Amino acid sequence: MTTKLQELPEEFYPREKLAKLGRASLNNAELIAIFLRTGIKGKNVLSLASELITAAGSLDALGRMEAPEITKLCKGIGLAKAATLSAAFELGARAIQETAIKTPFTSADLVYDYLAPDMRWKEQETVKVLLVDTKCRLIKDIDISIGTLNESIAHPRDILRPCVIHNAYGFILAHNHPSGDPTPSRADHETTRKIKEASELLSINFLDHMIVGKPIESKMRNYYSYRQNNRL
Image (cartoon, rainbow, N blue to C red; front, side):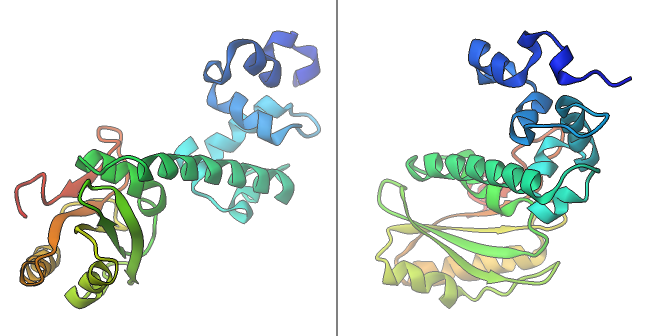
């Protein structure tokens, strides 16, 4: 017989636990349960939350799903619950980016932390340019192109034009690899070379080219930085 949440001691209620011990005291299922609010017949909300995470594969995978995808994971997750969860994850991602915007891009890790919430799980290759001022603070974030599963098209003029228009001190070029492996290809090397030559002609600082990959167990910040690898 499934234990009802109401039959558990009060200290096991996620909301009560959060109020007494703080949000860091809750495990992933307990946090999810707060947003789900209620369980379904024969399954309390904590069991439903655990099942949802398991069905998604991981909390990270769940966090990148849209509401309609979440509804398909397990019985009892309707659009209202799924939309609430999806909105909560999106708020978290935006909070991370908002903090990153206020922090100068003084390291490749900081650039990755800003880019990852949006780029690491994309199924198409996306090219982005981050325009920065003299203190490496973000001026503007611009999407340059979205390609197919394996490639994108980005001409040096499309990348450098925004730098001129916005009078940027410099720029960071970034794109993702849908495969998840950030190892640069020959095309990546050739594109980097051409953009470097063009930026030097215009006296615009090409600060880095970052390839965003998917996190793996041994490397949560999975990326390749041309600057960090002394290739720029």
